[in-house]
Length: 157
Image (cartoon, rainbow, N blue to C red; front, side, top):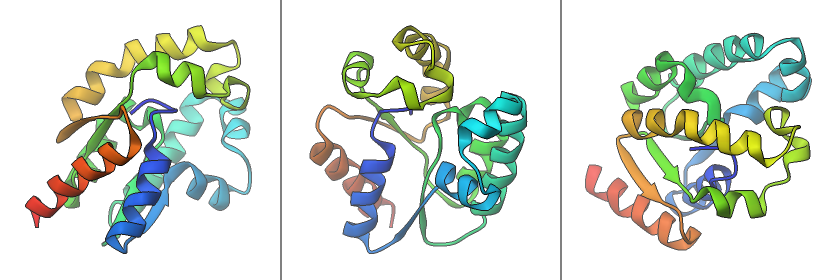
């Protein structure tokens, strides 16, 4: 889902409840590259997306992890194909107005010009999130969202 939809929060709760490890792709990239995502974006978005794609290719081969991608991972279908090879892809769908009221746009490279950019990004990616997801989960309340994902996960085992 889009930035601010709850991927990291929900992923961390799921990791604890399922006794699994979680990998946040953006954090992994920052640690491996030794700089912030914003620094990579400063070279170009394409430069960052190449690094992101290579990272997802690496991480998607790992077993037993919850993977929390950045919101733009959906921009390259190869990322989703790799994630689906061994896993299940959830789209955390949170209302855009809830995200706007919560998110600090000043720390997000694509949102430096304000919340209007978030609405534009949301609109441009929403169909991709829906099309690529194995399951679409509404995030109106984190605990409910976690419970829905856990129910699906238990039924997949």
